Amino acid sequence: MPTKSKDVASIVERQSNWYSLRPLMDHLRLLVTGGAGFIGSNFVQACLRGESKLDRLVNLDKLTYAGNPANLRSVEADSRYVFLHGDIGDTGLLTKFLHEYEIDAIVNFAAESHVDRSIDSPEPFMQTNVVGTMRLLDTARKYWAALPEAKRAAFRFLHVSTDEVYGSLKPTDPPFTETTPFAPNSPYAASKAASDHLVRAYFHTYGLPVITTNCSNNYGPYQFPEKLMPLIILNALEKKALPIYGDGQNVRDWLFVADHCAAISLALEGGRVGETYNIGGLCERANIDVVDRICDLLDEMAPREDGVSYRSQKTFVGDRPGHDRRYAIDCSKITQELGWKPKESFDSGLHKTVAWYLEHRDWCEDINSGNYGRERLGADRSAEMLAV
Image (cartoon, rainbow, N blue to C red; front, side, top):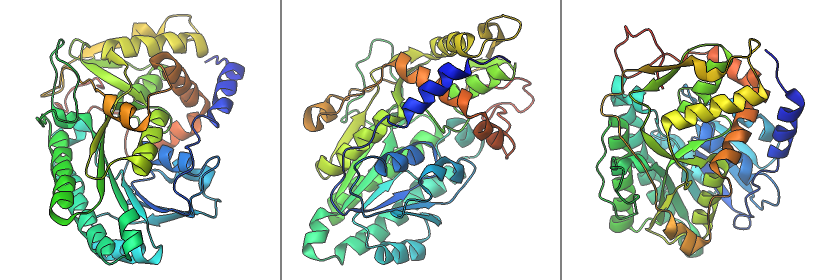
C-alpha cells in the first residue's frame, strides 16, 4: 500500500508541539487516574511538555483493555513522572499514595467508556464509574480534611465526564448547557451520570473542592480502536468493511483531544469550585460525513493500490440499541469564564489524526494483537459485519 510518508511524517513531527499546556500551579503534585488511556495519556504528555512547573505527576491506572503503557513511552524518563498500577476502588492503595506523594490535586479520567461494551456487560461500568468514583471521592475527602489549612484551600478534585449524561437532542434542539437535566440512555451514560451526581454530593455535603467537566466526542492520537475514527482508519487500510450504524445520520460534536486537555488544565487552575464546565469542539458532524472525510484523507495520504476510493468499503449495518441521535455542546461558560476555545477545526484535527495513525502502525498492530479484534459489541454476536 503506497503511503505519502514524507507528508505524513512532517505532520507528525509538528504534532510534538501541538499543545504545551500553560504552566500549571507552581510546585503542583498531581494525581491523574486513568492516565494510560486515550484522553488521560494525552493529558499526561501535555502536562509534562514545555514550560510545565509540575513537581510531580503520579499516574494511577488499572491497565484494563484500553489502558496502554505504550501511550506514555515519551514521558517514562521524566524524573517528575511516576506510574502506579492500581484501581481507584482500592482505598488502602489510594490513601497510601495520596500521603506518600503529598498530592495537591486529582484529575479523574478513570472510567469504562465504550457504550457498546456497556450494552454487552453493564456491571463493570457500575463498578468502576460509580463505586470506584465514590471510593476515590471518599478517600480524597479524608485526605483533604487532614491537610493544613493552606493546602486544604488549594486542593482540587477535577472529575472528567461526558455529554452523554444529558441524553439525546432533536435536530432543532439547542445544544446542551451545564443546566440541561440528565437523561442518560445507555448503561455507560447512566454510570457517568451517577458519578457526576456523587461528585456534586461530595461538594455540597462535605465541602470537597470539586470541579466537573463534561466533554463531547474526543478524537486524536492513542484512541482505542473500538471508537469510530480509529476503527474506520484501520479497517480502511486493511481493506475491511467500514461499518456504519443505521442511516449514518447520528450527529456528534467532535472535540480534538489536545483542545480537551487544554480546557481541563484551565478548569483545574481557574475553575470555580463546585461548578460544571461543558467542553465541546463546535464541530457537529453526522457519522456518515465523518467516515466520508476520513476516506477522502486516506485517498490523498495513503491511496489504495487499485486506485479505488476507500468510500467503496462503506457498509451500513443494524443500529445500536438505544442509539442517541444527536449530541451538541454549548461551551460558552468555559469560554467566558476561563478564555478557552478549541484551536482545531474539524478538518485540521482530523488531518492530524489520520496522519498520526498512518505514522504509528506499530502501535495499532500492538493493539490488534491484544484482546480486541475490532469485532462488533453491543449487538447480535451472529452478525458478520463489524460496526461502529
